[in-house]
View 1: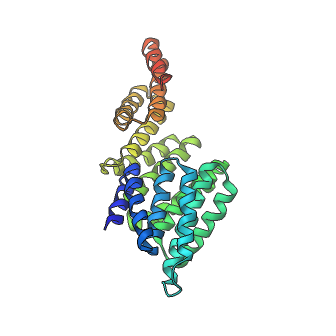
View 2: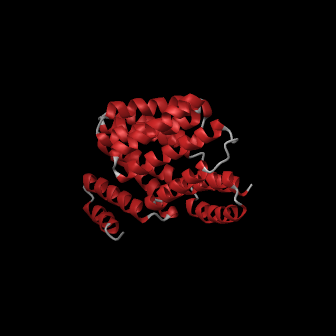
View 3: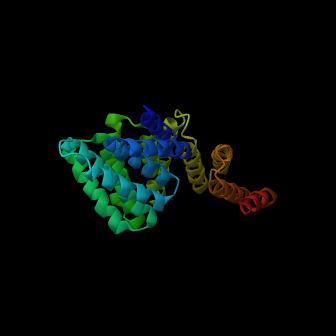
Length: 276
């Protein structure tokens, strides 16, 4: 179906294309009053817009999906309505986390978690534990963050969602990097990289992981290896064209050259980073 095609686009990180096509599906479903399609398409729009950083628009579609869900006939499956409401609460939690409202983020993520546990939704539980881990991370509670990331792995390994597994391993790498456990951080980042490199469409995820590995090697003083990973990250980011992320990697490469004593190269890369 067209909605399934859009779901695949979302998983492939083709968010703008997903939004364009899902919008058409919603317009048609509104004319035909297809409430089930409207619930799921609105949720998909919210997820894609969230990944694009369009938080206000994402919340608008979350509200829309909740309204459609409430209009479903009483004869519709209770488990279906519970599952979709859990997804809505999960997205709300993610949006509030991105907006920095960690209290509301925790509230809605816990609501999602309770329903997912009740229904035994293992993959969804993996997603939610990962996001709760991010909330604890932003609160500065690294141990609780790591606990939830590890719980996420337990569920995701059973369902083997490669894309989310890569993200969770990467989060564990970042947490251990913050804690100064550099070898442990590298181990998690390498696991993330091994998975993400097999996913043709996950270039942004792979580029971020390569950058993080480069940063860890920089901190370990292994500057040549750091440069190798950072430059690989830069190539991917330039292919994607995300200027903000390109600037960060250019600056990191410049910093490594500065540590190597190559001030000419350092200046070149840092100046390039300022152009974005």
